[in-house]
Image (cartoon, rainbow, N blue to C red; front, side, top):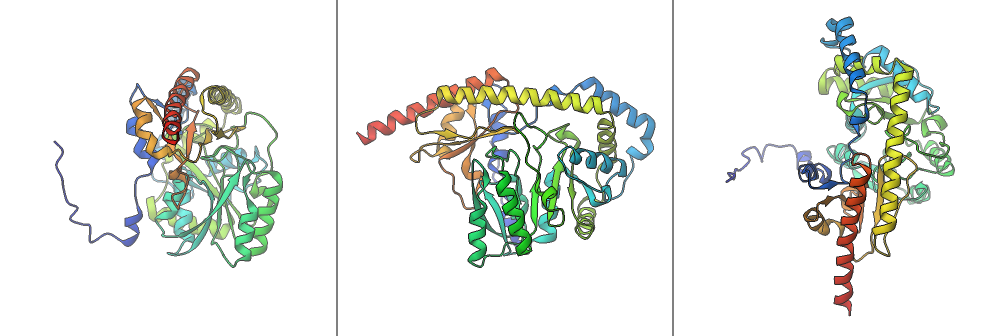
Length: 409
């Protein structure tokens, strides 16, 4: 039997620590990891698709050729050669970057925390999408902001709502967005809205934080220009190799103007001195072979496209009338809206009993909205497991529909 203990430091914690709680996504991992449960919850990249022998070869080369550097401390900004490779990756999406304007972070998640650290004072207003990436809400939340949620639709952030807020006199410190195949909704901001957003924020002198982890995972269609491409002076761009290579190397980055980069470097050095030299050099070496990284990326995109198709087909077959969902052209996620009388969070325990897991929509709203919404991830389970999981979810929803109908009769 577990012992009950009282936290004797409870009166010593800073005020901001009171808002530090585990996200609903992380809390689900233990349950979702059970082999009998089809987890459509966590957005874990399918690293089994990586050519393991080649990763081992690259790691061996790095240690054999540069072991004394790989196993030592490094600079706070990150390995110069890696920053050059990251500039190359950004150029794939039309973002022109000087490696001197890049800081390497421990995943893009650390970049979000550092952004919060250098920009947010307690009580500051920040604009976020509704729904928004839960990791960003967690990172920013430690710095005690107020949130201005801006709703999204199939064309991404509804920029008109932000414009109306500015007319009312609201002045967010920055606007945070995931414009390409966003987490959690999977939608992509339209070209027209991108232009509207950068023009609006430029005129109001409000910086934009553009988070782009999924941009290279496009299944079909032509890409719209990234926000950083449209306005390099006012957009801070965040990226990661977690989706195009490996989340285990924990390599992300921020691209910004020199004054911002210098503050991010100082904030990073205060947090962890420097990133892992070994991981940075391994990542640099991985992306130095164009045939290797492009071939691996193509395999990942093909895998995720097939799994996206399996999920959409299964949703068409099994979900109840009145439910709707997004149809992403890339990325990891589908966003489901259930009839308003259903509570996805309340149903989660019953879903797990039926051996399927998802993330309730309330996790992605700073104000607790989204009770009838849920996020499904198609990136990790196989097509057959996806079909089985959606069938189990559909059966549960039909039971709830029948119960609801009997109560109203």
